[in-house]
Every structure is written in structure tokens, then in C-alpha cells.
Image 1 (cartoon, rainbow, N blue to C red):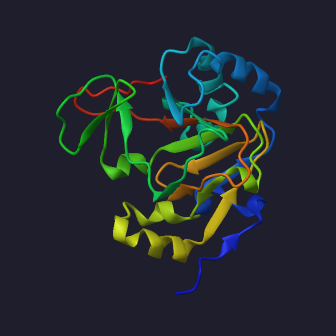
Image 2: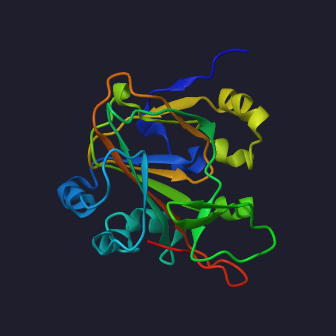
Image 3: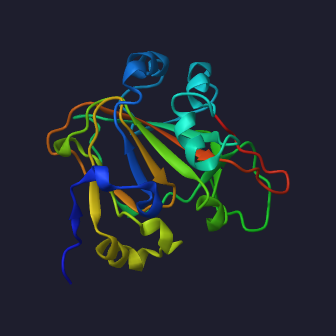
Length: 231
């Protein structure tokens, strides 16, 4: 089978239909402030799950510099429901194969039909929800360092979110159908994604500090007493 086409014109990607869009430099004036706010988190960790960091909240509300990007897709009821800081460096330089993000973070475990299995990550309750809920969410990746092609940009398969839940044996087939894009970025750039988009990450070939604040957004409540943990 032929190799998947590689998309190099990142400016041509649109949230509809590709499930991805780059906003250039929109957070550049705030990078130093964000880094100072996140300075309390442990260093040299692949991912730090964040809750209750007051300095982040003004950025994440629907009228804030980050939240307004999500609100442009989901509307003014959009809210941040999970926040993770990824911190890749020469000492912490990992790779991940193609996959979909399929879990959400909630305040407490409740047995609700369609929600499961459950996991505990970073002391927080995570659960796999019905896939149609994920399909109505968006994910923002706020770049706090430059990410050239040599520093492990996120790889995506544009349009793959439209295939629904993709079983593991079908991952390569869907990626070949959709092609791939390497989401390079400069500090202050923001990538907007459909949450279920297929994505991967390689280890950096020339590793340098690569901090990315990843925020999931939703505009709806959970059923039967389940509550988003939020930010």
C-alpha cells in the first residue's frame, strides 16, 4: 500500500473538514505569564495533569485568550474540562503511536450507563465516555516553546475524526486514507483539534525543551450526576 500523503501546507488545514487549525502567534504576548504560572509544576515529567491552578483560569474562560478559541467552535457555554502540561526535553524524550484520546476527567466515580472503563491518572478519576460526547469536544494545544520538525511536533491524520471510534487494527488504514501532517509551531501558536482526531508523537531527533499546554473543552453537562473535574 502506498505511503500516506504528507501535508506540508499547514495553513490550508481548516477545522472543518480537517479537524485541525493553526492560529499563529495569538498567545505570544502571554507566553512568559503562562510559563510563570506553570512554574510550580514538577519538571521532567511527560505529562502533568492540572487542577486548581488559579492563575490559569482567566486564560481558559470563554472570553479568555485560550478559551475564546474554543468558544469560536463550541459557543459561549464552552468550558475547559481537562488541562495537561506536556514537557518534552532531551532527558524526557518519548514517542507515542497513532491513537485517539478517549477519556475525560470527572470529580468522582459514578456508575453511569455508557461510561467506562475507569482509570486513575495523577490522582484524578478518568473514564471513557460514549464516543459521540468526544465528537462534540475540541482540544487546544498552546505552544510555549518552538517546535520545529526536529523537535517532535504532533503528527495528525487530518479528517480522521470523522471515522468515529477507530479500532486498533484499523489505525494504519485510516492514517493512509487521510494522510499526515506534522504540526510544527512557534512559541505562542495554538493548534485547535477535534478531540477524537488520530494523532501520534515521535521522539525528537534534535531534542530541546518542548512545553505544550493541552486543554480539552466541552459545552455540555454530563448525565446522571457525573460532573467534569474542570480546571
